[in-house]
Amino acid sequence: MDHMKLYQEKLCSPEEAAQLIKDGDWVDYSQACSYPQALDRALSRRSGELRDVKLRCAISMIPIATVENDPGGSFTYNIWHCSGLDRKYVDSGKAYHIPMLFRHNGSYYRKGFATVDVAAVTVAPMDENGDFSYGLTNCSQQEIIEAAKNVILEVNPNMPAIKGTECDHINIKDVDCVIECSDPVPTIQSPAASDLDRKIAEHIMPYITDGATLQLGIGGIPNAIGTLIAESDVRDLGMHTELMSDGYLALYRAGKITNTKKKLNRGTGIFSICNGSRDLYDFLNHNDSILSAPMHYVNDPAVIRELDDFISINGCIALDLYGQVSSESSGTRQISGTGGQVDFITGAFEAEHGRAFLTMHSTFTDKAGAVHSRIIPRFTEGDIITTPRTQAPFIVTEYGIASLPGKTTWQRAEELISIAHPDFREELIAAAEKQKIWRRSNRR
Image (cartoon, rainbow, N blue to C red):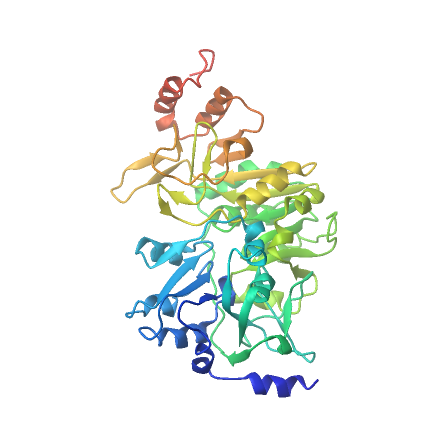
């Protein structure tokens, strides 16, 4: 087969590719860095011409043209997991959230719950075998493409080529059309760690031992953990994570991650989605020591439990005295999504020496300057419960760690109040007493 000849036959302009999309279609833009920038711009110019086109994506990293420029009301944007930008879209009524567990994301496509008329995804340039690497987003890419009636590839030389354990590429013979784009692949700057982040990280550090495998979320606290590990004597760590960010890059460069002690995928770091700096993307390009993998594998608790010494560190927004955790909404306002939090909490608990930590600052300050506790008596404002109290793991604030597994309601109240901000402890005790989850023998 002459791959280049076939490539040229399928090559077209973004405007021509956008003509594949019809009224009422469901169009998948993949997730994160694999969003098709040129195709989206071309499609946005059909605003007013098309009707009821539903777009689906996750973790938008740059403005979406079909959301920003749609005076004709042709497009509805739907999001599996919200970034900060997506949050603004949802707040303004320009987008809608799709609840999910990340380990099931591909199954929604495979089982027909998420139909796809057109899949449009960004890939790395074609190799000598006619294959295009999915690059930074393995996730559910294969399931999306297999469910699609039409496939548009947006080929970008700035997308790194990354090998995977499986489902890491598509061949030119299996696509309907190809467009080219040389826009920079979206990057994200990781937030700097604050003093509070560092205090929280210091509480977790004693649990991170030689040979442990890490799953880190994104944000200031994981960055603080990375900094402390890099400065520590801990050795031979492993990586098995749904999202790879620059925090891992720092650990690789410090020689802390070697993957040599992992009981699964020994010698290899595993991720499913990557977003971060250009430096990180260049580090991953043709790096055979790090492989992408589908989310149905990375986030499967049965896989995670095989890693034995597994440490999962993620963030949350608030929790109540019963141990219910909200990690994705503030009241009814969507902030992010369930993502893989429940997946990793489940897998870490089942791993022989596993530990899962959910971290947060003890308070937040609202726009009016009022300070509020993130540990509250009970949820009453429509907050989405991400992790049920039956699976609540270790909770960490700057004041310490609360261990919740196996604890009674009164023990949970005691532990959680002990890591709340001191200014709120008395009112939390009063609430616990009223809710009949405070023993007379508890210390005050």
